[in-house]
Image 1: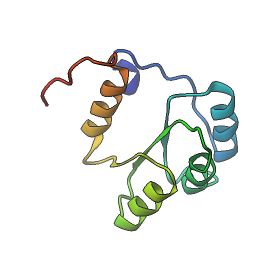
Image 2 (image 1 turned 90 degrees about the vertical axis):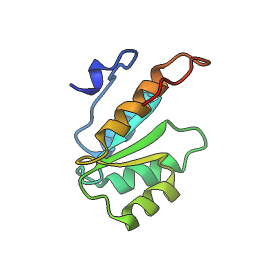
Image 3 (image 1 turned 30 degrees about the vertical axis):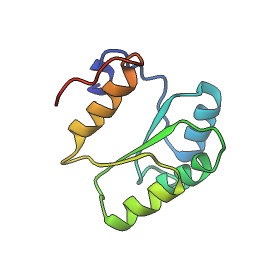
Image 4 (image 1 turned 135 degrees about the vertical axis):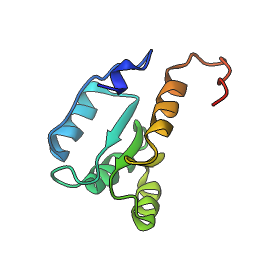
Amino acid sequence: MLIERIPGIEVVGEASDVDHAIESIDRLQPDLVIVDLHMPGSGFRLIDVVGARTHHPKLLVLTSYPYPQYRTRCLKAGAEYFFDKATEFNAVVRVLTDMARPSGDPTPPL
């Protein structure tokens, strides 16, 4: 619900597991996918599959398990962003706000 309140952002889908997420990504062609590492079927698998594609949506990991080894693995596999749910949610909002801003508009100060 918080994400839908960001101007210019539209949530186009949700998935209950990795297989459903992959099917939805293929069908909906989103600009960004927010990945929970502990989703059924493993968010790591989702990043591996989608991140290996030549053209893929931006992958943003939002997790309660912000271990350095998880961050490294996700970023190497194709995720562009990796954030801790507890301490970095404001950074997620900034990323989404920047994505929704028309090209060329200056980024407001934080």
